[in-house]
Image (cartoon, rainbow, N blue to C red):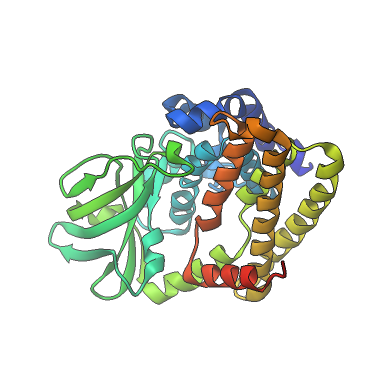
Length: 346
């Protein structure tokens, strides 16, 4: 079976063409509606990475990437909310702790949607969120600067660093509760629709049985760091969507460049040793960004003055592309990106 013929890819395409893309400009202004999330939950796409025995699909990585490209190109805000869900699923799949049996099935089957609150760990040695063991469980204190999907997610995977310098991940309900205060939704240049807030943690208690992962921080960072070096499939999704708005004589050579960069990026992402070829991975990541900026600019130029309308697809894609430039960014990737921008001849 080819990737494009896979049932989940077909389902993603139907969802994109029938619901997400036609409503994307309205969603961009009004916010991701609960009805979009319900459609995602019923699509089976939330179980892409989950084991079959828990109700998931254990889909090949090529299928996972293709569905991400399709959803991001159709409505990046909706994609951004649902993409948070896959890290909790993979975390539960890998753990042997009791929380796996309680939550993996509901998450895999789309009965629950999970958000994530762990990107702040990448600012180490600065510690925005600290965790301390108490007699009644674990207590979280600090600030989660970015949390996406508030009001849409059912649960969240929350992370902090313990006094023993361990990374600790645990699940809690995604709602206001003692020890958890929520900001007003952020007004962003793009993806405001994703309902992103900051969380203030003042002794939020999470019981021991909710812990999904606990390991030395250095061990966690060693597995997390390679993930941020590879090109994001959503970047290719935005690029493809923008090319649909450009006259074919100009789109054709850009499409060839897209196919080449995508092939090289995915081949490298599949390399069996994720810590190798760091410079090449970062270079391809930047190439993908550059092509995305070129194609979204071409879409705006093709649209002329109409592209400046808030309800125009070209300018929405251009703004969404800007947001992807910093999504999952680390100090390493930021430095590599800036160096290449500074070195590129004009």
